[in-house]
Length: 204
Ligand code: ADP
Ligand code: 5GP
Image 1: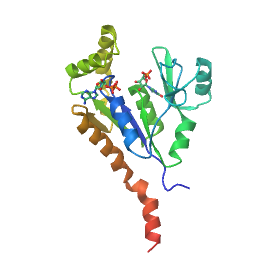
Image 2: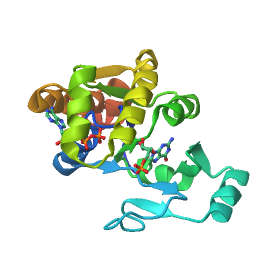
Image 3: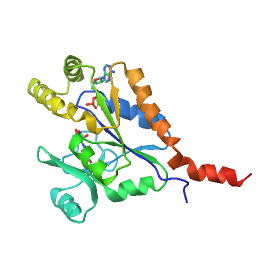
Image 4: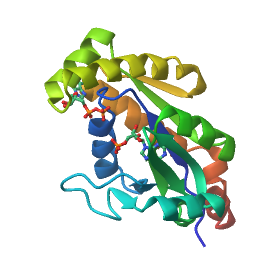
């Protein structure tokens, strides 16, 4: 029996803000923080591994999982479905490990309904101009995709009020420290530490 359940951290940001850069570093540096693996109907990109980047499933399997209520939340984006599996999430949390979910804003707001004590983190770019420069600098998107992502970014940024923590990713180091501090501070909350404190007390 573990002394506490793990916590759920949800991170959202407009594409190009630096969410992957920050999240990947965080899960590599903070012990006991696991990156969530979602289910998706989209095809794997070169280098992506089933069971590591995503669980890749076909449309029928995804729909059957929806029917059986096996997702904590799921969304359809441009004809592709993405969902957070209930069993997977529960199994990690029950071992006392924390889970970091990288999901878009609609799914994040639905997850909040399902898991009210989830910690919701939103990462903002310092400005529209800098976000556009980062999207260009990454070199992954066409001009048309950059225009669409910038338009979508404004809609996502309008939802910042629904989140608990807001981090502006201007200086990468400073943003990283802020992100890490949220995770570490949460781990000392009384609700989470009470059993351990009682165990220590019982030894006196
Ligand atoms: P996202 O996952 O939010 O789409 P990425 O992590 O892929 O974004 O970052 C987008 C680009 O911006 C990458 O080229 C990354 O190296 C760069 N980047 C991320 N954070 C910063 C920062 N604080 N300052 C400058 N460039 C950054
Ligand atoms: P990509 O196809 O580039 O891997 O992801 C596209 C978008 O889907 C990203 O914004 C990512 O955060 C989001 N996403 C990935 N998994 C999930 C999920 O399980 N649920 C929701 N709601 N969004 C997801």
